[in-house]
Image (cartoon, rainbow, N blue to C red):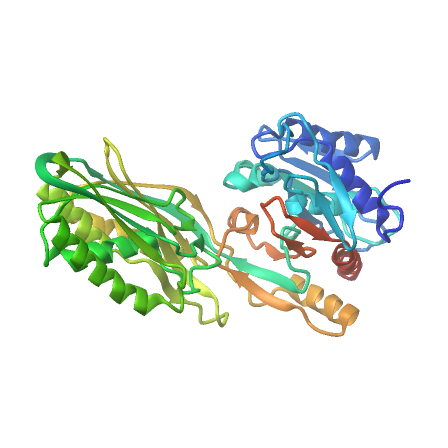
Length: 479
């Protein structure tokens, strides 16, 4: 007996189980792309597979007078994480899923319901002929989790639809209508060193919460790299020191929670006193926001050390003190939405120089461009190399969206209460497609998922049943 025999939308979960048997971690898309092509062939549906392994499956209208196609979209790849005792080989093995009450979970790994449940729901619709819907263009993209690579590579002439339902949202009571675009901004200050004698001291800033630089950017969480700049500025006029290295964070899109500064000073005792006084003030100030914040100061041996040149030290400290970070602007159209922000996610010292890497975000393209210009203007005043990369466009809010109105109406009729209408300060593939398809009317929905991208990921069965029902009613209403 199937583990899903008692579930109302049994076929959706059967397809999801079949999908889980196919290795589909980001960068390993061949097998899952073939899975979709085989599905199309078995159901006598036209399908196209491109060089990026994106799949488009076409289905004619059923019991519908409208000839305007609708795009149903999800991504094929999943984030692969596992417990320390798991023996899974994500390149060869499928995911072992099981039912626990109202939830589908995986044993020892991520579940991959982000975004496998979307793929399963769309395929379940494609194989049915007993529901009313307009022409469907089912779009399955690849490598979303590592930079929306498939969506960016897609030739959108394969699509005729001007309405799209993305199924990559994770809260069933919400319809998402806008997302941020973004880019990575890097500045590398060339390394120049000189020899100095003194006592080596390591200062560690840690215990901060950290978090996602889009979702948590307005939560008051302290950036350890920015805090390091504040600390260095605090002690510089009280005691002499030189910097050996400074390192914090490893991803531009994560608020760093730990930064380590290696220093050299001729007055270790004086430095420690000034440092403790500075941290005492900071700790008192941020105690409510960052209750677990601690600083550690470790005194090492005396000797001669290769330290930053005076010019490099001044440039690094000036930048860390003055560089903007966090929320830059709030939306007027959507109350509570962070419209524009940036995050100094990586601060690293190596033989090439001091790397400062920022994640820039905005829900408006013009504001994103201006923020990038602002950063270039700031760094143009110090000797450094500037790089920008990873650009992805925002999905700007559409005030008169017919698709929004239709979905909200269906949802309200179903539940007796309207869904939350939300814009997010993070990226979705909707942003890529809204930039590539002129006049695209788009929403993002999905069943409730929890602990996504972790080994505790779980999918609500009842939520999936509700969203699938609302999706079918929405398709019927569009007819």
